Structure formats: C-alpha cells, structure tokens
Length: 277
Image 1 (spheres, one colour):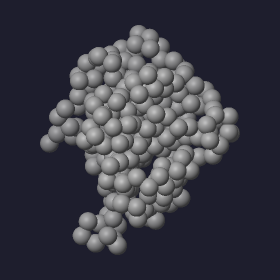
Image 2 (cartoon, rainbow, N blue to C red; image 1 turned 30 degrees about the vertical axis):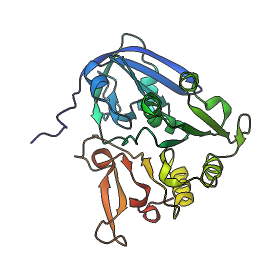
Image 3 (cartoon, one colour; image 1 turned 180 degrees about the horizontal axis):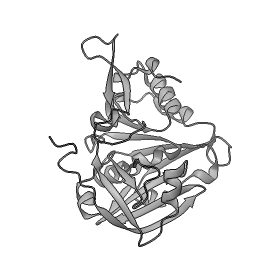
Image 4 (cartoon, rainbow, N blue to C red; image 1 turned 45 degrees about the vertical axis):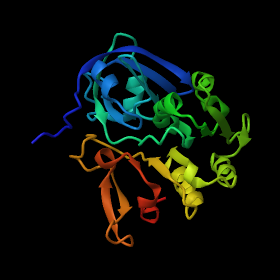
C-alpha cells in the first residue's frame, strides 16, 4: 500500500535564496520542477533540512508562490525547525515532500473574490491571489491584518496586477487600527448579493472563529484554510485531526484529517464549539 500520494515526491533540492523580508519572517525559494508543475493554491509541503535529525519530523508550510521551476515558501521563525530553516543559504540542500492536501476551489471568473488573511496566514493565500488575478474579470480584494506594521509583507507585485488591499494593524500604524474582523464586517454590511461573492480565509484559529461567527447566517460562500500540527502530511500519523459536524447528524462530531481532507474546508462544516480556545 502506498503511504504517500502518487503525485508527491520527496527530493533533495537546492535552495535558490532565503531572506528575511520582515522581522522573523523569511521567504525561501528552491528549485523543484515537479512540485512547481503540480502545486495548486492552498496546498502545502513538508520541509526538513538534511542531514539534521533534530527535530526529527519535517514541518508543514503552504506553497507561497511558484515562478517557473522555483517554489517559494513564506514562514515565521517560531521554534527549532524554523530556526534551522532560517539559517540556510543559497546552495544548501532541502528535503521537500509535496504537493500535499486539497487546496482552494477557484470561483468562476466573474465572481467577486474577498480574501481574508491574518498574520502569517498570508502565506496560504498569496498563491491563490496570483491565480485569481490571472483569471478574474471581477474585482479581487485582500483584507489583511497583522499585529504590527513591520509584519506586513510586500504586496506591490499584486497591487500592480489590480489587487485591491485593505489593511488592519493592531498597533494602528497602517490602515485601520484593530484586527481584520472589522474590515470583514464592513464588507459584509455593504448589502451586495452574497451570491456574487466568495470568501477565502486563512489565519490563526481565534481569527477564523471570529470570521466564521460574523459570516454565520448570511448565506456566505466561503473556504477556510486551517492550520494544524502535522507529523507526516499524508494521513498516517493522524496528528492533525480536528472536529467537524457529522454529515448525517450535524449535532454529532466526527474528526477529519486536515492534511488529506483539507487543509481547505467550508466553515459551516467545522464544529467550532468542539475546538478548545
């Protein structure tokens, strides 16, 4: 029995560049033709730095962007694994497993797309924005919230392609002061037919919960990209399971694997009350 999906491989690749683009936020690029050809918005990869074995397990990262045969990953340094990754440089080796997971379903070109990103959640939606801007005939808007102004990553290439951006910073130094939730509320309150719009959301759990609450009962079409701890990335370890509503009985909870059944889900399918705050 195959343990990994047929379209995935785990090659050793060469790093093209690895630079800090905001405090403790890095953009790493590596040459991976197979992955570059196969990757879709919302999918992820598992990365590790050979020949190191501490930490033993690879770490999951969203596919941030693809340019030709080069794949890019945006990440924040939060522990030993990402610390090791941040110290790699051009020419160093990287072990990559991917692409993994089920990504976003792209809307019809005439659908107005609202993308909501909180913090490092921008890493999971940047590649989606690239695809939306290539094919959309209706506007695409990004609602982007961070704690501090210096955490904002550069988005000029997307603005030049027509992306509309609204920013919220908790320190109030750029855009609206506060979280991204009020920006979403403004959009929801515009009174436009929700059948003409679709929302794509990624960020920390608390933000996702707040966004789902504001969308509840409005007939909103939305796709949420979830984050969860992963050890394998392809469904064997079952370490990434989260509670969802049972299809047959919505009052009951069933657990689904974020890695293989997601990471993108409908917010209505998630059992928010069963997820610890």
